[in-house]
Amino acid sequence: MRILLKNGRVIDGTGRPSVKGSVVIEGEKIARVIKGDCPADFEGEVVDCAGLAIAPGFIDAHSHNDWFAARQDPIPYFKPFAEQGITTQVVGNCGFSPFGYEPGTPHLELIGGGLFHTGDAKGDFSAYAGWREAAEKKTPLNLAPLQGHGTIRTGLSGYENRPLTKEELARRDFILEQSLEQGAFGASFGLMYEPERYATAEELEGAARIVAKYDGILTVHPRACSAASTSYNPPFGGRPHNLRALDEMIALARRTGVKLQYSHLIFVGESSWKTVEESLELIDRVRAEGCDFAYDLYSMTFGVSVITVILPSWYLSMPPEKRSSLWLRLRLAVETSLTKKLLGFGFEDILIAWIGEGYEDLCGKRISEIAKEWKMSELDTYIKLVELSRAQGRVNMYKYYNEDIITRLIRHKPSIFMTDAWIEEKGAQNASAYGAYPKFLALSREGRGLPLEETVYKMTGAVADRFSLKGRGYLKKGCAADITVFNADTVAHNGDEPVRPRGIEYVYINGRKIVSGGIADESAMEGSGTILHRE
Image: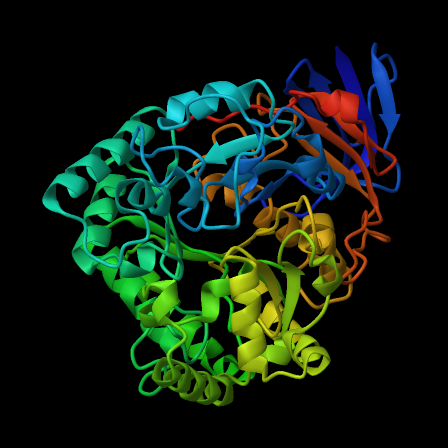
């Protein structure tokens, strides 16, 4: 089938100035990009794009939709992303992937860290190839998968707070190499989460060297994103912990030569906001040395995490029956109080997204609000919520940064864009899943970001180049016909509301129209995507 997108503002994904022109689609590929007036004798479907921008389909540099791709009906989990113009997502981030674990592991239920599970997906996903075969038949968007290191470690040792044994390390190496050989684009660490928060420096370095050997990319959720963190003992004092976490990964990149993508560079709590410039200087310095080091960001000032993320390692690794002692609660209370003051972040900045069946009335409420209702201390309320959710609850955490910091990061050369969002089956939804990319575009229009062409580059060509997504991210002859058509004058998100954005008019994926007039066609989305191969 031939399609002509005519007379639009062509933004080709390179960052260069846009031009008036048209794009011809033939089958799954872009057949031609035409500058100036379009041909009058075109045979095929014609879409008038006058007054609209024609751009490459947006690429989400950090997603978790691999957990939903192989489900019997994955479309509800992908539809909001399609409606904000996204056609491709990099998945398997933060150490979490639904594939690549020890066959027959007794720890299968722990994989996903309480945030993710594969639902009614069918198949053996212990090897990457098994998941890929199942997901290929279902995925509505293109996916570029990474192997989660946390998934491998969980399958081997559960959440045990100890180094891996020599035998376990050998199995880790085998599973990681198998995934890379079967086409995964790299690997990911989730150093703030169990069990990777217990991994030794030697263990992480070994994994990084394997990724480097295969010329893959390593994405890292760092050990800390705030000035004070429970990832360190004591959880306060000395060099700001987010800078220590950045130092750790810079040192890893220097030692191993791995291409390292620092996931969601955020500055949680007001106390960490003064570390922004030093963080960017550190990144600039290591890049000047020749290390392939970059990062991504989202456009929202909040994010989603597991409810245990702010608890210290010593507490989480303790058997539940021992956590109630008066001495331990006193120690936890003192550390939490000091950490809050040092962070410039408190329980009023944590919103409950989900606790469990029977507790739906708690969704959308802050910890501080619930504490008042229950007439309990905020810490006791928080611990009770952890227990009620069996440590599987979800929270929205605010003060990740502010709008001025977002603008600063947008304009920093090494940054690219992402959503870090997913659709929840129950509870409060993350607005980033609906409007993260339209907000980037709106910030451009308002002069709080980059020029439109450079903004589009950071969500298309730059992401494709960063993750070696061949034939994606650009409007060029021979590239995949992943295309987003939007109105640059009206495109916008809807604040913190998880609803469809404005201004995204058409979306094509592999030549198939899946969004028209801003609304996704669910029947067209069925199987429209593909699992991309690392070449």
